[in-house]
Amino acid sequence: MTEETKKRYVFVISRCISSISASITLLTLRCILYVYFPPETSNYYLYATVIISNDISFYALQGSYIGMAVLLYIGVIKSVYFSNSLTLRKIYILAVSNWILAAVISFPSGAFQTATYIPGPIQCGSQHCSPVVGLINFLIVSFYFLLTVLILSFVFICLSFHIYQSKKLGSYTSSQTLHHARIRLGWTLFAIIIISLAEGIPAAFILGLKADSVLNTCNNFYQADRLVTVTIFTSIDSIVWSMVLILDPLASIFFDIKILEKVKRHVNRSKVYYARFLNSMSSNENSQ
Image (spheres, rainbow, N blue to C red):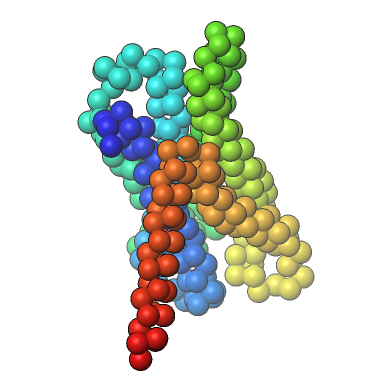
């Protein structure tokens, strides 16, 4: 693999790692919520570890999307700078910095999020602290989503214009390669917009709810209607996240020519090995 190819796939690997870790932490969090209900029966540090890990995965995933889009923009529009000045070491530093920034944001945010559910070393009451924590978390997540959507939209528009220019100049090979890159970027942009809506709508609705201990402990049947809309939206949010985390790696495979070729090669090789295995099994049975 050449250095040019490595530079293009650093953030792809970061995206895969963050997607896998996000899936694992989401599943783990759901299992903990199922086992320890109500949350007050759980351990603060257990909840905090899972929530912080989930936040790190989320912010690193957003940063990986941004990094992939920026590298695509530089590789297409500023190809000379990408080849000569942007070294692989610089891209590694950017990828590691993305994870460090995600951790810096997630540790205090996750610690206070956990404190709104479970008593621990940090006290966060439902009347004053919890609404502030919810608002700050909502603003940070909204900023990340907005930044990601804006950067991806900008790169998508620039890429579309560049494809149009390539077709006018008669560069068919270049326009076809960029066309696949634009499809992959378009899928990413679509997924981010859907996730941001699924994440933002229930979060905004929860912010509008009046915080009280009765709602938090859910021990008043006659106020349960206040939770119905929240439950519906959060369920939709979980479903959307699950679908995107499943479809995202598949889309990365089908919309990337090089990755698709490697996958086909591995599948064909696996077929050959499997056929040899079946032949050896049948020959052993015949010999017996």
